Structures are given as structure tokens and as C-alpha cells.
Length: 363
Image (cartoon, rainbow, N blue to C red; front, top):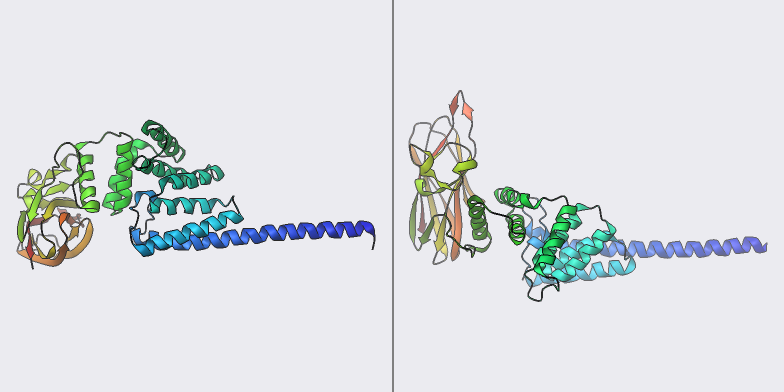
């Protein structure tokens, strides 16, 4: 065989072997990335809030041994993936999320920084890195950086993600009313760590969010404007004393402030109160509402913003009607709300909802 042809064949074989080896490593890297992502998804799915995938560092690290085992497996798979291809950006993003869920925020920061280095124009990586920095501020072992230095890094990453810090609290409010509670909590905590000013309405939202997530009020100066009722075996709450969650100036005020007849919902929205349960157990929740025209009037009762009972008032004869449901309550604080959901004008008449009272009785 011609010597030149032999050289070409040898070189081609070397190239093919090298390409094959590279492709093999790439395939293995992607395989282990997928395996790691599957383990991680099994954990994150438990936090899935109405189809929304929350930011991992806004979640509470799970203590369940099965979840911890899955997170450990996810980390192992992702590290193997990166050993085969250190430039596989998505693996770093997933690794950052896994470490956030494990509460290992310094490792999460390193993974997110690797991702943003490879994908500097991806806003999600910068946003998740900002939350990892924020969480590291409260880490016992902490960062070697000062709080001011960490705040500067957070602001840099938020800017790279296209996020205006002054919009964190409004976005938290939107997330809260969409029942994305952990996302809302993370946004509030980020805003507080950056010193974003809060109005009294913002503080009320933060109170509600802390109750929903932790069954307690936040530790801060000043008292909440939410009515808190101690619940041993029985409690009756008048609708006029419930706090109205509506737009503008009416937000955070008692319902009686905006009605010639107490307990009227003039527009869509919710009214809320808090019960402090001293002994856990099963309770019967009873609400009385009026059959006002035009029908139907749709109301929803919620526990910690999660719907527990939906009903319609259809008689239109101004009669009062009771609706009830069972509700288990643990020791601690619980947010109970009544929501009017179908405000509209029918033949020139504005539909409204009228509530008289709500009772909780131990079963």
C-alpha cells in the first residue's frame, strides 16, 4: 500500500477514535445528567405550586430520609456527568438546585457560578444564584464575605436577570394570591435582606405568608392588624371583623369599614382572620351567607389560601343559608379566608356577596 495512503488511513483512524471517545463521554455525560435530573424532579415535584416550579433556594430543605437519599443520588449522578463533560452547563444548574435543597448554599453558589460562566445570558441562572447568595447570609458557617458584599453580589445577579429589587414585594404578593407560597416567601425574604421598604400593606402580606408557611407571626416590631382568635373548642367570627383583602385603600381594613350592612363583598376578593389553635383536632367549620340577587353568588372558603369548600347561593330570596365542612387544625396559627369569586353586573345590577358569620366547633 502506498505509504501516503497508509498515513492518511492511520490519521483518519486516530480522528475517528478520538471523535468516538468524545461522543462516548458526551453520551455518558448526558445520560448521568438525565438520571440526576430525574432524582431531583422527584423531590421538587413535592413543592410544585399550581404547576409552577419554584426557585430551589426558596424551599425548605426536606428532612424526609427518602428525599435526602434522592438528593444524594442526584448529586452523585450530576458529578459523574460533569466528570465526563465539565462544560455541560445544565448539569451545573441542576447541581445548584440539589445543593440548595440540601441546605448547602456555598456548594450551590459554586455550581450556579459555573453555570452562569458557561451561560452568561441565561437570566434564570443569575436569578437562582442571587437567591443562593441571599440564603448564604443566614448560614451558620456562612460566607467569608460580609453582608454588604453579599448584598452587592445579589444586586449584580438580580440586575443580570433583569429583576428590579423594588418589584420583589409586588411580585411576592402576586405569587401569594396565586398560592405559590414558597415562591412568595423567598421573594419577601430577598426584599427584606436588601432593605426594600415595606408599607403596612406589605407587612400584612408578610404576616399572612409567615402564618401560612410557619404557623406563626414574624418576629418584628409592631403588631399585626390581623384579628387573631384563640380556638380551644369553639369560636364565632363576625364577618364585619374580618380583614378585607382588596385593591388600594381598602386593603387590610375591617369589612365593616366599607359597608352600610356588615359583611358585604362589593367586589371580587377575600376577607381573612387568624385562629390560634391551642389543641389539635378535627373541627366543623360553618359559614352563613345570604341568597342575594342576581344569582348565582359563588363563594370559596380557604385554609392558608388553599380552597377547602366552594359553594353557590342560588335562591335570590334574601334568605340565609349555612354551609359547612370538616377541617383538621394543628397547634399554631392558621389563616382562614372567605373569597367572593364571581362579581359582575347582570342586567345593570351588580352582584355582591353577603356573609354574616363563621364558626369553628371542635368535633
